[in-house]
Amino acid sequence: MFHFGFSYVGLLYLLMLFVPNLLWTKYKPDGYDAYAKKESKVLLLFERAGEMLVCVLALIFSDFNIRRTNWCVWLILSFVLMLFYEAYWLRYFKSGRQMKDFYSSFLGIPVAGATLPVCAFFFLGIYGSNVFLLAAVVILGIGHIGIHLQHKTEICGRKKRKLPVRLLRWIAGGLGVAFIGVSVLVIGCRNIHYLKHYRMIENGVDEGIYLTLGGQEQYVLLRGMNNENPVIIYLHGGPSSPDTCTTYGFTDYLIEEYTVIAWDQRGCGRTYFHNAENDSDNATASFEQAKADLDALVDYALERFGKEQVIILGHSYGTILGSEYVLEHPDKVSAYIGAAQVVSLEKMDIYSYEDALLRAEKAGDDTTELINAFAQFQSSGALTDMMLLRSLTAKYHPASVPDKSIWLALTSPYFGVEDLQWFFKQLGDKNTYFALNSQLFAYTLAFDAYENKTAYEMPVYLISGDCDWVCPVDSIKEYAEAVTAPSVRMELIEGCGHNLQYASPKEFAQRIKEVLRN
Image (cartoon, rainbow, N blue to C red; front, top):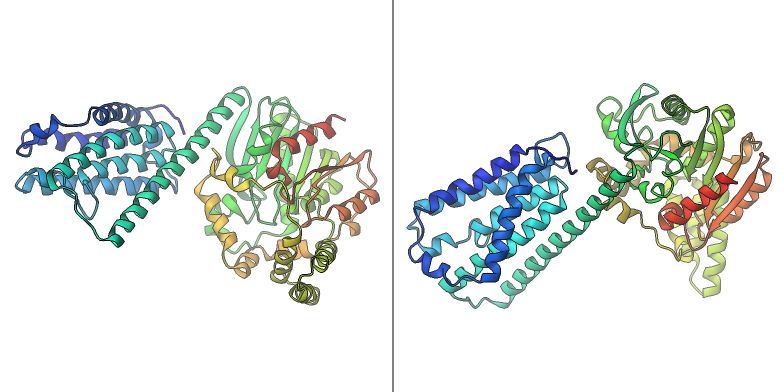
């Protein structure tokens, strides 16, 4: 976004806009000049200002040009509306060219001569993720559509419509205004974050690239203000729950002192879609392969930034991958940070269940469903039964600080269609989703940190939200007491649940800096 350069798409749109209007000057509808004299001066000011801004902005950003991205759907919709606009003009020129013809609807779209181009340029602004063009189009729309509606009312009068029709019109109008408002807000926030990051990373690195790790190209985001700083590699949870596009929420507070690398691991997110043709069933997505991929990423970071060691930061499932990796490769890791450290899913869910059961009994709630769900999970060990149990225990374990990850994703300058696609894949059929990374989920279910070595050769820091019952704090405290390392420290962030890095991103980053400094 915000790539200055000539936009041939913008030029095409302006030609499609102005050529019919130039022809129109010879074929104005009868009586137009008399109506024009009565136009609202305020609306006319909005129209003129909007026209000037849209014309300039549509030409000076190359982001509006055709590029390989799934956001092209907005460009296609925009172009279709411009084609409808041309069809509207053809109909007008073939008509009797009366005022009612000029201000008529087209395909059910009111005052199509104004509405179609305004909507087309608005969609173009969404495609280019450019809040300046969106704002300019809103200004143009207020004036241009407003004037057309004024003239149409003068010509046709106000029709008395039935109540259901009026309600539908009001609902449609409300939804339209809401869509415009949300689009401007979200893209505006994305633009603000982009400009902020552009200034922050001026002398460092801010790259979203595909690296070949273990023979497969995988998506990696690198951010830092100074390439001389220590390197942190962040491992997302799940398994297969990438959050690379939202990591800026907490890394914004780290990148002055550290270079942070986030990664969509094999079998999920952008990495999955990038390799779907060759590995659609994720046959290569095993835990051993994940460790090999991570080792390749570590080697890349060491070579690129000239380091001897990196810091590993894992969240949830990422602590399984991270802890096993650092135990096997102590020579490459200077410190290990486990956020919401996984000890054993079975043992942790017992902690959560027993606490939820006590709270339910104290509240006088019917505990039958909760007890049955726990018994079913104990019997089957199935992921779907585990998720059902967690949905029931979650009622008794609310976090006072909300998770902001959805908002961070929507307003992220790194957010892409592939991120959205994977999000909906996670929300789909659970059996299908779990099967896609069955090897990783099977390993995670069987994982027990006590069966591995508990002697680390580097400092170990464990950070949790004190309201986290997915990875209960008490189970992590017990594990911390069993760990031997040059330094072991546990930090709790008040009011946060499992996704503490997105509930309190600034405090999360501050705790990381504090433990690493010490």
